[in-house]
Image (cartoon, rainbow, N blue to C red; front, top):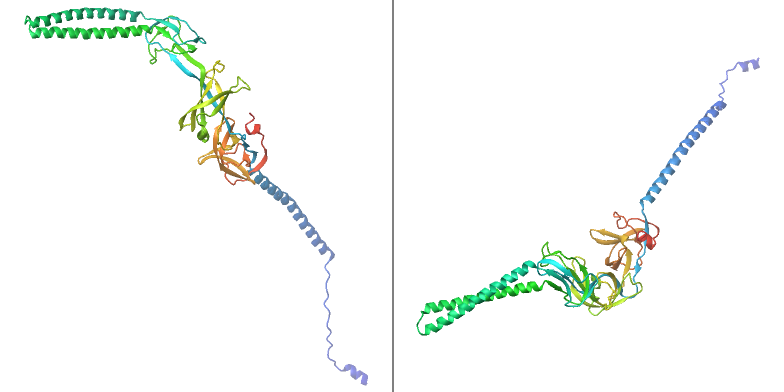
Length: 411
């Protein structure tokens, strides 16, 4: 049959293209990835939560350390001195005339007539000294003088006789010359004995001690029966009395070199003492040393103060108020703001947030404060108690402004 024949005919094979089959991952594999991811995130969170505080703490520590490395300081501002040119200086009050009284002869004190505080006049008897040895020496010297005068009288008579006999050639020229020479020698002996007697009489006159000028006895260093040695030197010498004339006083003041050109004779000066609050005693500058003391760098001046009623006591401590003409304005600062460096005196000032070291020149030292005559403008913020290790440009932090009491150490 025809149909059967067609079926028996061989046909080429038909090639069919198959689509790839995508296999879906199993459900349990997705879970493993999710668990791993969660575990990684958990571990990373734990690590981050442990490291981050440490990083923050380290950052804060570095910041705190940097802040603590910046020193905190107290500051104070310079104070301008009074508008007037008056300066106040310490002074020593001394009597215009003062003298220690020593004995001029040796002996024992027989009696004294004045004690401390006694007002005496010139030539008034103060004490008597008993000198038995001197009295005996004087008697011996007078006896020797009498002997010498007798010998001189005999030698004079002999010489006159020999000169008369020489005219008649009754004696030789040699015998006459011997007689005349003996007279001259005896005359010299008499002169020496007379000088010795006058010396001992002068020493005997020192048995009585008189006041050399009008004044007040300020010290008596002897008593009846005390051994007295002559002179003012030697270990055995003793000052018997001290006398002072207080009607006029000398006041010595050391003026700083910065004011030395204005301290001239004739300048008015007032004396202030603590025992007379509210009172001023007028004085006048009478002379200066005309030289700067190399140790203190000051000029010594003398001020005369009238004291007719002896109100002021010699030896007292006082303050002298002087108005120096032409004195430049200055400032006062606490002493604990000073820095003593090898390059010179400095003060530490805060400029912005850094320290600056300023050279200064000081005038008078008032104790808790010093006067600055050069180097400051008055606008500086000075560091109180600056450390010795402070360097120019070093960062500082201002804690607060110091009060004057704090700046002076609470004094």
